Length: 262
Image 1 (cartoon, one colour):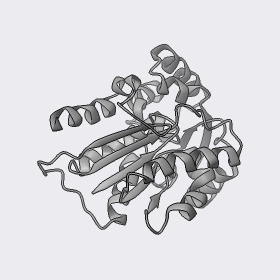
Image 2 (tube, rainbow, N blue to C red):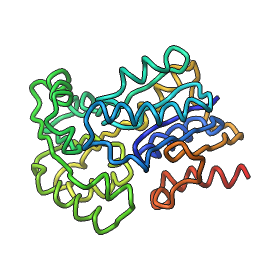
Image 3 (cartoon, rainbow, N blue to C red):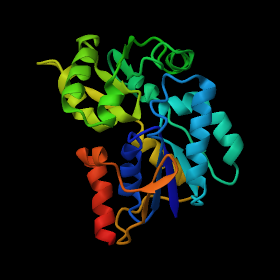
Image 4 (cartoon, helix red, strand yellow):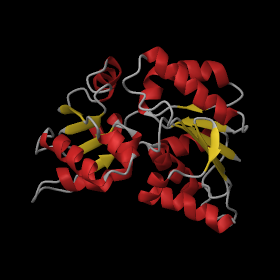
């Protein structure tokens, strides 16, 4: 079994780690685009072109499924990716977890990139899944880039700026960019108000990992002793995990599996 994941940068390691936890025996192909990132400021056509190139690099390794572990690519390029790769390779997109967040009690905040915040796509999800719920869209300029480079001071600064825009009474935060899941607990600490119930964070990594396995007719089997191979592609070039990925628990989990297999 082999699962490919694609993103502009290292945000894909959150979903990759989720797949690794569910199926340690699954081979992983991580295809990202450091030469072309960030994708957010590009036109929809430009995003689609970069996403197709990254997906095709992954497809050369003959995966059983491809996870589009990027909200921006899922918004703009998912139809083109499916048209190019399916039915041979099932393509699983990433959708912000607005529906489960809205099902809980209390107001919701959606942290997302400036390009996604206020977009027709996100507004449509709010309309479809959070009707009647108080939702605040919070733009997070610079946060994905800070996470991508593991820039600690920039991460602290951009999280603090987004937290200042988040109402004190929110009970759930949707992490609307895969990079944000790598600093989820730092986001929780910044938004959690003293004396209030624990804040709920809603990412997408676990859901897309489970959906990918479902699409290929596989189930979780965390107890297997086998360790799947890890292939890393940076703008199509075979490489090791970027050093910045190892700043996060998810990256270290993936690296540890590689070391164990060797």
